[in-house]
Length: 614
Image (cartoon, rainbow, N blue to C red):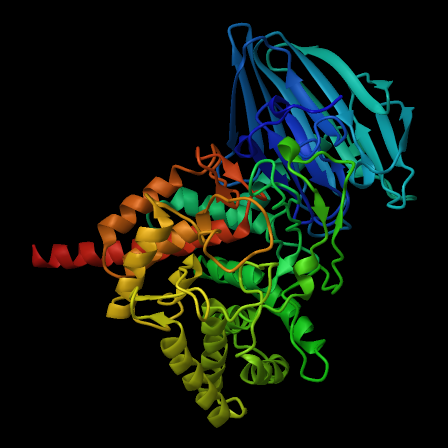
């Protein structure tokens, strides 16, 4: 049977839970429609969000005719509560993944059904589809548990443990059961490891794991030093970024999903379950601003390993696997329909071998900031960075695929050139601050050459704006970072005229397009796309830095209204405000943090000046 668009829930109707190894997307209707297991980049076991019929799901929900659905996080945690309300009764489903730090990780998902009022009948179905729904599996039923055993190459075995009697049908476990007011029933889904016992067999496991998980998240977010405006949204963004962090490796995924479309029915469907140097470096910056230096230290160690791998003064890759692996071969999954028919569904990412020169600027900026606000970087890291900066000095003029990873041919992009300037500038600042050795005179000469090149070849005197790439008159939202990386002053006349041009061409109320697809460098793909939420937050920060604080605040708070019911953002927003692209996206949440931090600081300073005058 072919899926219909009504089978699919809006992307924004999901919450996210995780254990710092992987995540699951939980719909407002109580259905887990996406989970890769046991790691972010492992094959999926639930992927109904990409194919309603074939993908697999784990649904736990009450049978309440006409029930109203709501969803919330327990404050300062990543424990999700889905609530169902009707005249016949009130029911809840709580979902979390257990975070373990001291012992071997069990990779455990816990779901608990509860009746709050009345007597409520629940229905549960757990139907995994292993290896991206490519592998068959068999089921073994035992007392109090069911084993789902993949017969594919992944070799995964899942155990569903519950006191509720289950029946097996077509490889799925199903049940209907009734709970009276105050009664609960738990379901624990976990990885089975041969010869290892599971703590979930303990009758008090669920209640104990719930308390431990709640305490973990509350202790973690309590480390935040942010005390300004919009604190709840800032902390939620921080909690999202932490969920996208790999505990064993210290790396961060750009987003925990694959295949969610940038245009419904289109082909812009990518796999974001990897570590981009760019995204991770910006994420590091966002977390450091809030005082989360442990995450910064872990990522610095991961980054040092990647720099240490370089041979013969070669370039870094733009992205790596979470464990640092280099090859991320892209392939399609033709048996999956794709979200609302958006195909092809891709896993892996062919852009991993692209040349994107901007990554060196984000890398060196994050190292510079970590050295300033975290801990002094090591001698070994510096010695590994010197050849990286030398490589930038030799290659900064090369055409590349740019920040947006165009697949229609290389160009000389302004943003790439800008971030090469940042790379060399931050290397010079670090060397001078720490008295590190290096070819400083050469670096200084290259930095100034890049600066002059940008003003000579990327300034359009007719349009009075900096352009996307050499020889074009196209505007690009990535240029909004020019004042934010301190290349140009936020009130410089050339920048203010560029900002006005971007407002006229790319800004729609508070929403910002990254570029106009019909005019920009060809990206090799069909179709249009939505507005990019991270660009919208960049725009807010540019307004604030330019001194237009009230306009910045107005647009920032309007952007907060585009978050979903839990404060989460996908990559893009469609014409009707619906979320598009992989979800949730780290870049959007870190841009929110950065904009909130800067805007709050400037508003507080302005208020202080007014109070002094009074």
